[in-house]
Image (cartoon, rainbow over the protein chains, first blue to last red):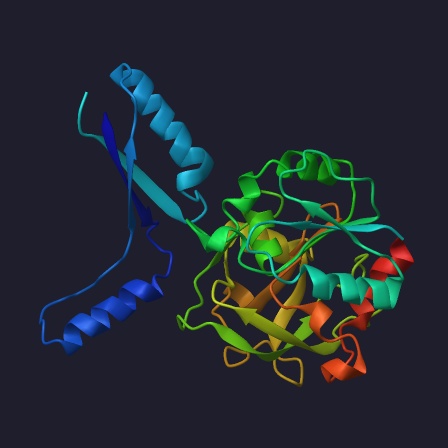
Length: 81
Length: 228
């Protein structure tokens, strides 16, 4: 089963990389870009297990390693049973 | 005085730290590989600079979950002095031994230059040989040195006098211009509540002998020796 974890900076945490991307988009002529923030996608392939177990495992992975709770939020999408 | 230095794949400043410790404290620091599950008894444990695990995921994130860390946390709880420099500081915050996080430098550049640091707490076992408010020159070399913590944590650090080093100009003023990486409140180094775990982004081991072009940072090692 596959999971996609999306990690983003918390609101209020400065994102200079997002700002740099915003600037580059503007330089390329894209108008109307009010804001850009950059995050991470981590795709995890899990062996088959009950969905509830998978969710619990992934939550633990995020809490323990994949996201830094001081500065990052995370969301988990399970894409297959 | 007995010192040990932890190292990981990608660590690259352990020998310079060994040299500084040998020069000033006389100790032949033992290198301890990250896969060891026990750290030898020591008066000081150092987490040196470098790019452990390539800074993959986040700087210090994987190092902070390596086998040796369980014993480091035990040693910290027992009050063994611990010094984290640069990647070592990043590892300590990732391990929860110090609060906050080190993020990408605000200007997105790897900054490699001398800065000035002001000693805001000269009572610690790492800074006792300095006068309070003393200004030192010290080299930095990092891309992820931007110290961040929420306001409550920053206020607590200030209130408890746990900000040990702040980026400042030559006159000791902690101005925005003197801040090389965007760190909140110009924080360059902090200490834990007990005063035994110090993390700092600058590299004190780089300015301890005349060949380095200065000896401003000898005092840190002399303080450690005096307290051992």
